[in-house]
Image (cartoon, rainbow, N blue to C red; front, side, top):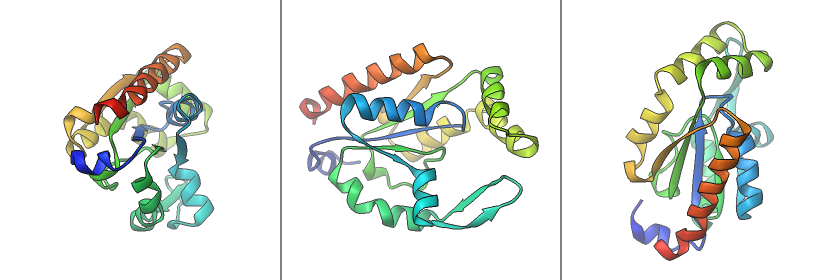
Length: 178
């Protein structure tokens, strides 16, 4: 993102990404409460506004239509003040985000979280492998300027609270930094 585009916004946009089960939604909700930014859960948006191309029976999820999602969000993102919560990041325009947070969870903790959600078979294996190989961190680094991408440990509630504090402090200082 060029400095000129972010300077037009009075509040920053943050992407919170990571493998399912790393705490994106819990972190985003707590962050929205602490910062008074708008939380946008992409999974809910896709369901509510039907921004998908049907259902994937194998992975038990909607097939997101990335173009429809981006069209739906364009004006909101230009305004600023958003926390976008999604497990992928490479299809969002780079100009939208001032900070990209990649939550990471230790594999055995992640396995337990996903198993409790009912993940089994390929869906469970694919997500654990995604975390092992740090695919979302690499995707974020390839999709956005490296200086705006930050990886944060998300194993415990204490980790989440610390992450929310760190990001909230960043949001507070954002206006003076632009």
